[in-house]
Amino acid sequence: MHPWRHLHARARSLPPAAVGAVFILLAMASLPAGAAKERRAPRMAGEAIVLENEVCRYTIGSDGQNRSFVDRATGKEYCTPGFPVMIAGRGNQSWPATGASLEGETLVVTFGESGLTVKLDLAIQPRYFRFTVADVAGAEVDWVQLANLRLEIRENVGTLVNAAWNAQFGACLLACSPEVDSAGADQAQAHLYARVYRQYGMKGEKFALLGTPTGGPDPAEALLDAIGAVELAEGLPHPMLNGVWIKKAKERFASYLMVHNLGEANADPVIEFARGGFGCIEIYPWASMPSYTINKTLFPNGLEGLKRVADKIHAAGLQLGLHSMQAMVGWGGMHDPYVCPKADPRLLQDRHATLAEALADKATEVRVQESTEGWPEKGDLYLEGEILRYGRLLPNGFAECERGLHGTTVGAHAAGTRLGHLVNCFNMWGNVIYAPD
Image (cartoon, rainbow, N blue to C red):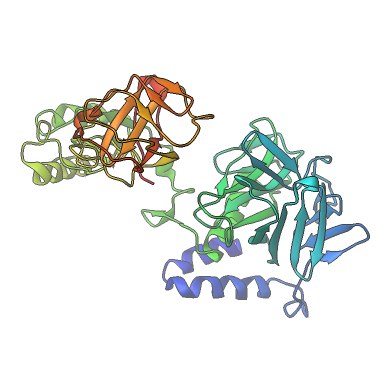
């Protein structure tokens, strides 16, 4: 039995605090005699920084370029050379890494004339590498792409899971903290990517990079085992479905039937239809978002009616999914209490300005102290609970304003009041949907 599979079975019965310890012990037990006490550390080799564990070796040049990513079992090189280990950006500008050095076990990356320095604490685990942002200093940037690793793996590329594999070897990059944006950047070949943003915080954010042999009857299964091990070791979400890790559960292949208007009155025929080959029925029982109040048109008996429909679906051997539309404010209608009659100040805003003069309740032009250069040509504004939609930019303001949008309360606003541009997080198909900050 594969040791990671064995651990998955045992880990379900352990308290979370014990799981990491079990992985450490298991990794040590699998090492050759005498190697369990050996602690690997990053090292300099000529003009390069080398990270090496049981399964792979990652080399970064002192010029800030990715140089090598080697499968130790076969000696095969997978790195696509000539790309910087990191990239940083501000506005329309971006800077590639131009230098890399090692201070103890901290990777120090510089970005030429930008003056930016990024430091990552390195931890070499038996089967993966962990990188933690220790510092971002010397220049203000909007984002830093902490990983920019391209690999010559094209047979299987999973952009959502940020992984790629072939019959011999696989690699994956996992975000290990909430503010790391991690996804594959190329569908044609492995391009492992991780980015952090100034507005969400950079210091302390971390990610894991793994390479693993995939030889055997099921290469994808071998890569999944390695990913699961990192999830457990790093305390990442590792959801189970009927006692099986969801990435391996057979139910994940079952089709789902999405029915927007399913309710108490029409549940039975929908369930009968779904039994013909679906594994799940997904419904939208909400009146609006994000309050999640029950739609009384579909469920006159409220939550109790929804529970009865859920019981019917489960009794038919089907799963029930609730279309949650998370992080969307106003989906289903802008009548949600987070929008009207007074919009919540925590709606996500990406630009701010200050009223240069008092704004009367019937005014349709807004004057601000700051320049509006770089603002969208049209958009929605938050102003003390009122939402305004402007139709045209002025050099220092907004014109053709529709007041009291979405039924928000129109009022007069004093000079010096702060306003913000509301982010439309779902502008597909003409939608305007806000988001929580």
